[in-house]
Length: 149
Image 1 (spheres, rainbow, N blue to C red):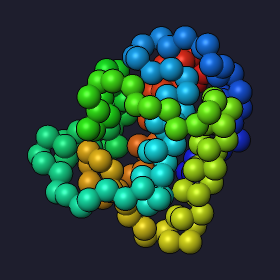
Image 2: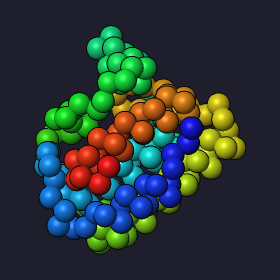
Image 3: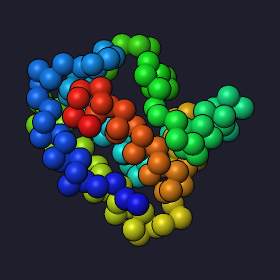
Image 4: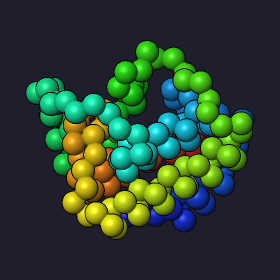
């Protein structure tokens, strides 16, 4: 089970700069850039300091990755102050291209090194299988946010 970049691309085609969020404060471009950061974390392109997840974080990981639980609405990204981050790219189309590129990089990393692990900001080290489950739920959550799921 790998990320289906062609399906993701076709869903992204339905996302416009003025697509309204059904919940949350993100704009379409903020959401796409947020997913790109997550992909880069999983492929090791963005590195976080090592840490041991606490008991609450381990319980959250267990629930999100190993049950049918959907990604909860209203959960904030780790280290988020509840405010929108500055946009990195000039427009939504560029952000979409960067997201697709980050998915391809992720796939390449795990093709070359199937045992590679990288640090999730809340759950600590994740395996490819764990990242796959996380990404699937994370993308579904944000695509539902903008009605493109």
